[in-house]
Image 1 (cartoon, rainbow, N blue to C red):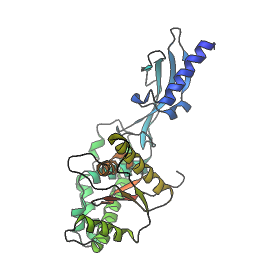
Image 2: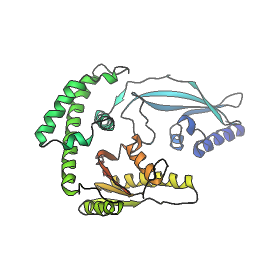
Image 3: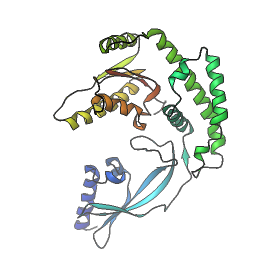
Image 4: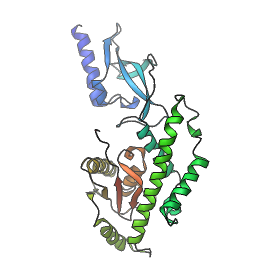
Length: 302
């Protein structure tokens, strides 16, 4: 390889590091994963990346995919204009890789986000009542798994997925009921002022194994403040999980109706897929100026 070609490849490697290709999902970490980087006669740089396309279209940036097909994708970069394009894809399509346990948890989280709310759960009196209700709910409305029918899935997918999904769904609803019941016994049902709410969450946290993170409410500028709020909250989730805490207390200040604030940024993060590896959403609780996030146990070996 001549010096000119080496310089072109070095430039493309710097573009990796600078995030130039992030618009097409290529991050700095992919610099260690490319193969077959070469320079064409007209000065274009080509390389191949092994991409992991999620079977069901879920975002996977920053954490392992629960279900994916490995696809070798060939890219071409113009070092002068810093433009990148795909020139060849699906060159090698491997059998799908599915982590059924992780996928089950993601699907349960999605169900909870779409309407199995705590009000319905809190009205139930016994664990057996909760179990029977949600066993019937699953068998009548979820057992077909028909939302997967639009995807190219392995022939035995539903057979493997269904029993795990059913068990996890019912378990999560029972745990959510226990959580709601425990807290309803502690909370003051009467209306409270914001100051009383603050006092209340202090009482609730007193006996919990939790990590507290304070979100900055001001910064050099508005956008920087919001960006920092998101990153500090996300880092707090990762730290709480890594260090074995049961909860993360995010002190984010008061929100303002119709405005984007650190409080709304934190709440949006907890609702998002980005927080799914770290948070048990239905067991998390929001107050006027704080959010108490229930932390998901880290899998052994992860």
